[in-house]
Amino acid sequence: MNQKCIGEFIAKNRKEKGITQEQLGNKLGVTNKTVSRWENGNYMPDISTIPNLCKELEIDVNEFLSAKRIGLENYRSYAEENLIISLAEINKVRKKVKLANIMGNLAIGLMISLTFSPEGMRKTIVLIVAILMISLSFIINNENLKKFFKKI
Picture 1 (tube, rainbow, N blue to C red):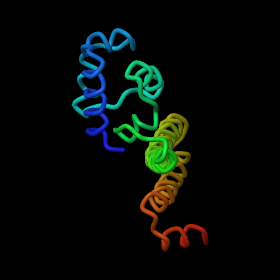
Picture 2: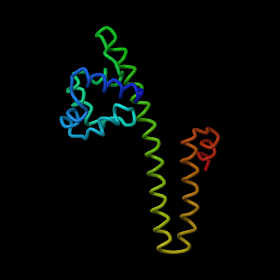
Picture 3: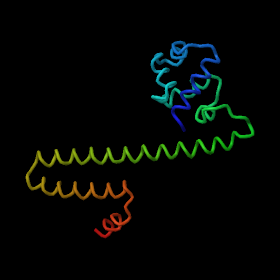
Picture 4: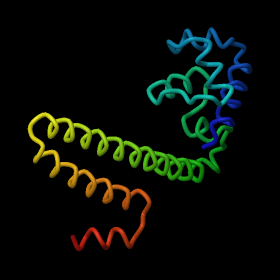
């Protein structure tokens, strides 16, 4: 999934339909600047906008993700390729969100421990360091660290 190619595909199809960025934006409930950002490859349309965008441009989602028109003979192979790419992107985002959640929970735990007692704070700091190391081991996929933490 190449964001720049998808943007160029949006622009090409919009121009073929003879509509302006502003007209397309109005139909989709976004600004012309948003459409411009999509077409320049700076942003991707929100997932909830993609079906309506495809309808307006008279393309399907598979063509949108492939950034080109697809004949029936190639449709399945492109659909499978787009699915695999999409799942890989979801996995990347999920890892980032997981780390952000862990960091947020650790920060909350630290604030709570600081509020209640110095002894609680020491225990919480040890726990935070252990959780951070475990989290980092999963993120960087270091097998030795994973084995080490399994023993603990």
